[in-house]
Image (cartoon, rainbow, N blue to C red; front, side, top):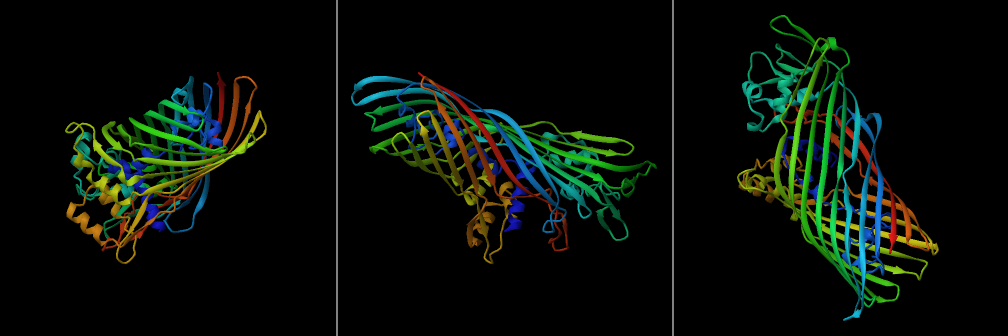
Length: 568
């Protein structure tokens, strides 16, 4: 199972080579609600609670619960942290522990809701209209780690990855007419080169070739370092309408406009511990000694889409509330930009290369969402609430947004097959509580559990078939090959990469119109095993003999949120 998780992490890095993946779809389609400090403090278990502008994105009927108009603004600070350790060969002991931290400011909520009295016309006591912006995901994460390696190198892996390409193509070809931009950048920067008079076989700048044995390997010990950061957010702009039927039944709807800004960057650095080990002598007598190299990749996604959401809250008895909501899929239009770059530094000189910025346009259909909740209020002393939400990620689908100009829908057959096969149901449980020791002061707590929607497949002998992910993502399998492989599978199992959130908060409400809430939330993720590059040292049968280095990272996300509000 561990090797599967490693390969899964590699697929995340591999998006630089293989395009859109199941993981991109899950990232852009997932909701991890933010909202106001009060809704976050109560674990966003707000489906049956309402009355708060942070709850409107969860259940549109919540706006009608409040018998007043209100305005809120919510600044926040988010801190991504990670603890990482390094293994030079996956499966060997971890060493070289590092801590990393990354901080950003945001505005996870702002909005206004206007309440209109109706003199109990046709049983409608009042109705509300509102305009609210709520963050539904925060993409912040950070990883940094590394250590000494005397077994494999990034440059060696990239050299093997380029084998088969003619050097004239890598050196003189146009980026836009060639799929493997990494190999082009690696060759043009000097990170890899041909050797021994060959024109389509490559060696890394950190390697040496023995012409007697025919073996190529690392020239000496190196220090490797890997850094990765993601940031950005998913934001929903909501046009809300809600109705209050005699303080018993509340009905509401949202027209939601989703905006996504996602940035992903990583780099791998390698340093020679002794540059004399990496001496390169050219035919013209030039001698260079490798000192260090850096390969970096950046990806930016900007997206927008529209959806509808409707919900209700029902108070069958005093104190008890029951609510539910349903949200349509969002078809989001995505503009993706990515770029590769590399630098190689010798003691004597340097060389570098940067690819074009590759721009691509496509669409993604996100899943339907259903949520239900129950809450109970204890007079004016407090309340408890619980929510359940689910979304089926295997229903996601990629397609082109402009047939012919940016490819065809068939270009996404591979990743769409992967989504259908490996996607599954994500279940979310949200719990919240609020206690009011005085009418003006509140103490709140919340908890969230997110199940991992992804599944892993097993073949007839029970082996994990994760290596087939790459072929499915690439669309490298024909339909007949794919269905033959699918029929050979004996079962599937959920991955245990679940996520937990805990939150605590306080609130103060004046006797006038002003109120303020303060909340802290911590999101704990499971351990992340990250392979820095592909395994490339194999025996004659193609079996891996030396695994690539691995970083074990334990990430967390901390949020401190302040809401300032006015009722009128």
